[in-house]
Image (cartoon, rainbow, N blue to C red; front, side):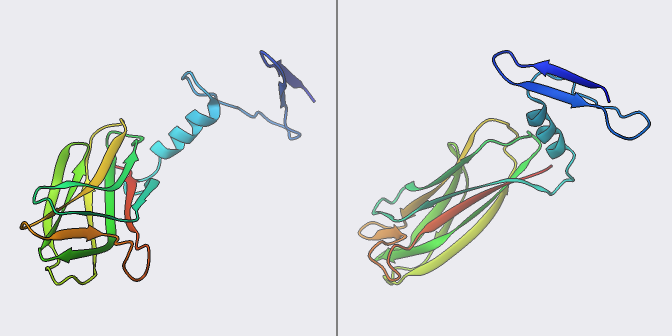
Length: 182
């Protein structure tokens, strides 16, 4: 049995040993610079069919409120670095809010671009669950941040998400980012 031993630059070795079966076995290395396993992983991702989930990122916040009538950051944020510029990002946002003497509003923002905004919940001071999703096409392989902004529709009230004083205690709002193969 023939073997090839490759010594590492600083320590260790890699041994390639011929198989115990007759015939020819071919090992094809990638024609790119880098670590074979990293490149193999990237090649495997690129061969997945469109619609496959490539990665999932989560973020959460345990509470924030505003009395502003213009959108402000809620603290609910997550960042993702897409593997491919053709990927789409599926965003799911959910949690519990409590408007007091106002209607509350949400805006979903990618980096500094508002993707959409909507009004939610009346001013009854009651906890209200909310959830929405959005499919985005950021067309980049750079780190991309998605965040939830909140606002009051009129002055004199407050809009709270994940009210830490509410029951159940420590309500958490979530944002989930899923990279979908294009």
